[in-house]
Every structure is written in C-alpha cells, then in structure tokens.
Amino acid sequence: MPAPEHRARVASRSTSAVAVLAAALVPKCPLCVVAMLTALGLSSAWATFLGGVARPFVFALAGMAIALVGFFELRRFTARLRSQRSTSCCARS
View 1: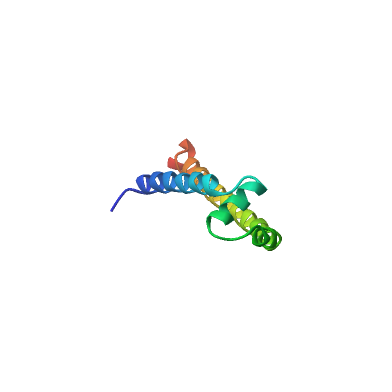
View 2: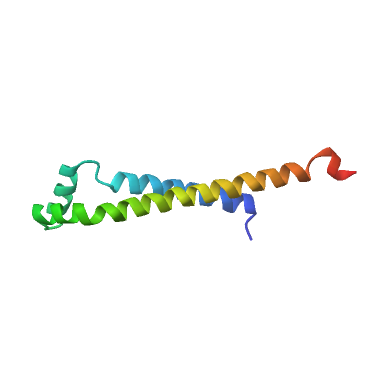
C-alpha cells in the first residue's frame, strides 16, 4: 500500500491536471461559446438560450468549487497543526 504522502502528492497532481484541462476547455468569450456550439451542430439561437439557462449552473459549480477548495485547505491546515503539536518538545516529556 502506498505511503500517505505519496497518495497525497498523486492526488494533488491529478487535481491540478484536471483543473488545467477544465480551464482550457471552458470558453472564455461569447463568440467562443457560439463557435463551440456551431462546431457541435447547434445554432446561435441555442447559444442565446443556453447562455441564460447555464448561468445559474455556472455560479453553482463555481460556488461548489470554492467550497471544495476551502474544505481541502482546512483539512490540510488542521493536519499541519496536529503534526506540529505532536512534534513539539513539550509533548514528549
């Protein structure tokens, strides 16, 4: 079984890779959205419709991503505090 440090390092790298790929695939401007939908065979009318429908989902996904990052940062912070407490000179005596 791999060491916890190794698993954490692999998870960190894979999370970063997924984030980079997702950021690369997300259209950055309205014309990019239209171009992507056109490439998929959808018209600009669909782009207009999907733009209004997708906005709440985008905000929800962004909120969930922020909450998830906060959760993992809090876990990392508390683990660091626990390891500092267990390695202090006063804990051994």
